[in-house]
Image (cartoon, rainbow over all chains, first blue to last red; front, side, top):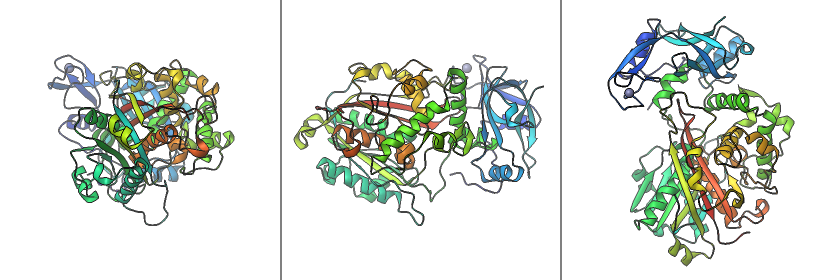
Length: 145
Length: 385
Ligand SMILES: [Zn+2]
């Protein structure tokens, strides 16, 4: 059962399956699983390759560049901590699905721009941002000029 | 698959409510819905030998739940397919009835809108969605809705027509939570929740339970002169999950619509009960069930009257959008409404000539796939009301 501290931003519950991903992020790298049998990349991290069911999974760094598949302007975030942020800053969250250039899709947040600046197809690049009140980083995205 | 010899004989549902003060336990709702379903069937508790249940807000293992209800059973299932649990429960019960394992199965869902224990959430959601400030299911459907609007030109007015039409149906249904008429302007100008999703795109969580009773054709004929037959049914989990970049506007119903419509054709369907956490969910399901080509869902709703008085009645009791979403009992609400129509017991919101209905159940928002669970079934009575 997951218990939550509603005053803090949600953090991942890291397991042996996805530790390398979060270690990468906290070293300013975006690394994703690569199947050593069939060479397929996949995200999110899993116990097996979704194509060949192989268990030999390595990690490959990706460029962190991609395009917006879709996005939503969140005025009512689920997490109370994000809700407080939206209320205090008056700025909604831009939550997006991003297709990375390597052909994998990732959900994240687009930051440092106005909601009206984002379009389906907009080019974005990953950044690594500390979660406030922690020394833990999560990957977010910025619009590429 | 095509079914022979499996019938629905009754249904029951509690009021759908949002109590301000202390609520009842989900198990009280569950017991009430089962009792009403037995009454509607002309059966008693001792006749039940199979039970399929879902209650996320009462997460006891299913034998514990059955013990609390005082049920000795030969077949027991906890359905954990989210909003698809009702239809998938019906499929499992139909299997057991056809195999002769059981005679009478009750399928029930019960939830309350203020959970007393923390809800379990899946690893992809906790680790790869929640840290980024999303707005719950509203945001995940917003991503799909924006994509559908961009790819196919679907408009908010078209989605609004769905919301306004099912509200019209709810006005006529005493069981529905929201029965005041909704104007298109109210839908269009509603508060933004997760753009492009606004307030009246979202279901309102509530407390409640719904149940239905299934049995063999021979037993059904002993207890009623109006058995409702299960004609065909199908389910799909994780449609195209190996495609790492699936098209989120496509639903898993595309993978089962052919087998659904083997014996019954589209034009024979008198009404549909489509799982409706959002109008865009209805639109995409209508496309993938084959009522119109992919992407033409907007045009389809433009060219049909979706109310109970119309030529293509959708969610004849108001669905969940106007009826309320009693957690994962939401799928059972749609089955109950279909049975009410097919038994000719819908009163003021009865569809004229209702003989054949289609019900879907969808559930559990995924990560690579839009939703993990998709299911549907076609039901048919002997007579048209
Ligand atoms: Zn592989």
